[in-house]
Length: 210
Image (cartoon, rainbow, N blue to C red):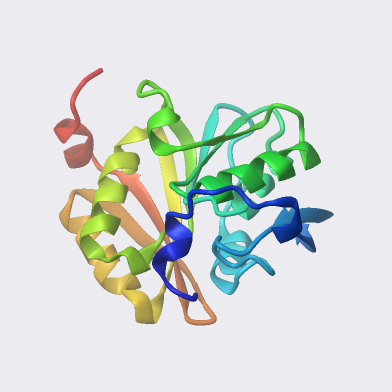
């Protein structure tokens, strides 16, 4: 990473800034569009690859969430694996969302919905959440992000997060347990942890009813 600016880049990439990259996702070779000013613009980063290598396939339908989508490798994979589902690709970076819009036609039409956080309907719940979360924004912002989205998991659903061991994966796991979540490490590879997060009875009872 070059710094935190890729979390908040506002301007979509111009045609001259666009890059074409070939990537393999869900067993498919795709030619995607990327650009500077987003996370890992030249390849699928190692952490995301670890998550993709160890996460179970998402449910076949329902609403799925790629939280902090970047140019879209997780969202595109979800859409390829679950073409009948609706995949929300959420980011605060407008350039990233524009790139996802450009890449979305590579999968089933209408499957991937790029959105700013406030554009996701408040009543939407998710049957799966995948994320390579932006740990470099700092603990308070990261915690606030997770506290906003984890309670929107549908009953019985789980989130899968990938976090670097040296970037606080173990403290984050402890913190999530302290908040009442069932959080287990399901994989460890190349310096990254994959964490599965599920609501416990304590967590569910603390959430407001709709």
